[in-house]
Length: 158
Image (cartoon, rainbow, N blue to C red):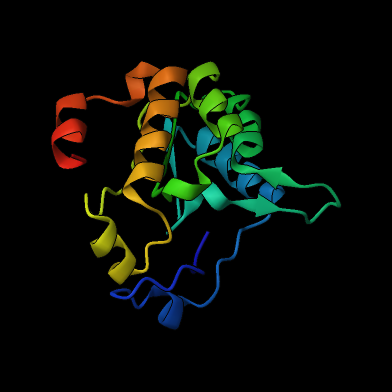
């Protein structure tokens, strides 16, 4: 993915990279197959808000969880990662993919921009501390391996 639709107050990505765009899933799967054939063991999918990935090129909607499922089947690939995630796009199907797909790393890169609703509002982040905490609770309930330092989250998000 490249680009972003969030327009946070401090960020120039939407201005310099344009709107959020996802590469076609078939293109990504083919590239990862070629990488695996060349001996690559690990692939990291990247984007400003990678968890909002969507591709409808072939007439049906493919989300990030679906793409991970397809990549998980590629022989030779041992580990899949993705970053950076946007808190409001942390879907239950994506969390299930992280939990259930053996090649997907249980690491979720999700910025904790501020523990203050006022600051988040000024930053135009589009979510509240309470929404961020609810997301963390869903992650912890789904797969506790994804929340490594719970002391940090409790201290930061007081």
